[in-house]
Amino acid sequence: MKNAIVLLLLVAVFLSGCIGQPPSTGVGNGLIIKSFSPDFNEVRSGEEITFTLELENIGEKDATDISAEIFGGVHNASGWTFVQPNKAFVKLTDYGISFLRGVNPTLNLKGENYVLTWNVKSPENLRVDNTYTADARIYYDYETSSLSTLRFYSYDYLKSLPSEQFEKLKKEAGVVSSVKTSAPIEVGVSVGARPLIVYGNADSFTLEITLSNAGRGNAFDHSYTVTGAFSAVTGEAILPSQELHTIDVTIDTGGLDMACPSFTATGNKLHDEAVTLIRGSTKTIFCTIRNVNKDSVGNKKDYTVSVDLSYGYYDEASTSIKVLKSETTTTTAPSGGVPGA
Image (cartoon, rainbow, N blue to C red; front, top):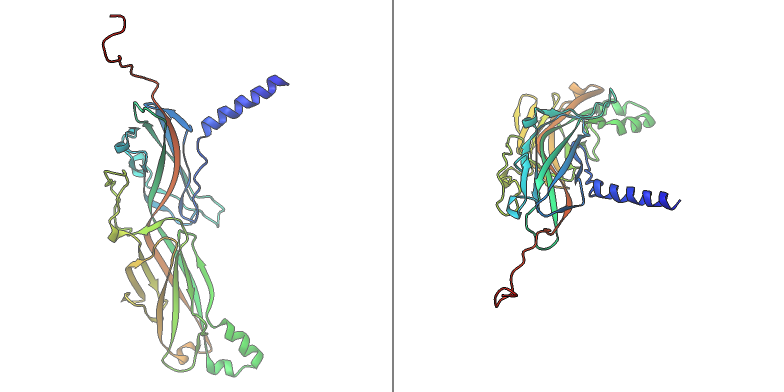
């Protein structure tokens, strides 16, 4: 019995050394960092260790132009050396991966995942134990799609109905259905408190389009190519400030006469390539639906409005590792000559 207990303790110690830090788990949708950790909690000064970064696409669109980096306490300026690959910043195209497929709810298929590893050498000749924080960041391009049905009723038609039916249909005058893809940036469509009831031949209504940053990262301009320009101090890849928080938004009005501030119109399409949205926030775009004609609506008419977003997105995770001081010691002869001389 005593031998069995000793064996169990040995297994527990072995596993605690191999598992490393608890995994850093991503939140939100899109491409997430499922886990990030070293393969051991501790390493001796000057020894090699592997950091593993697991990615998974849990959104409904394909993630493209994917790149990743390690920075923070683990970078060249702090004495770490990248062995394989021999750089902190990598692109998945370097490994023949052009995209990671998204979730397919219709076929009940999970999104693709991918595992990246960095083999690194810890700082040499440390005189004291030191704990380093390692950060990982992923960059990728993504999309969000939303499709909403807006139902208009003419007042002349509604007032011809019994009051009970009038009240029932009045509640339907608005957004009757909305379908959106899961993504780190979400889209919501609303007409507010005013129902879409048309009284005349040039009525106008307000359409509210709300963008929400549901992930834990930040959006950036999807046309910008992350190249791995690093800070000499932190080893962190640098994104120009003008590229951050920028989303490309396209609205298909479905035939409605619509105007949105700062959007340009081409046929049924409205477009703004520089809508700003910061981490953890929401932004509402107020559009005006103009010149709705009760004669063209008839009794009832549905319009389909789509909102499509294109953007880059980055997510981060952190872990830590303890580097034990070097086993090599230097002995210095005391002043006054060599003992025994």
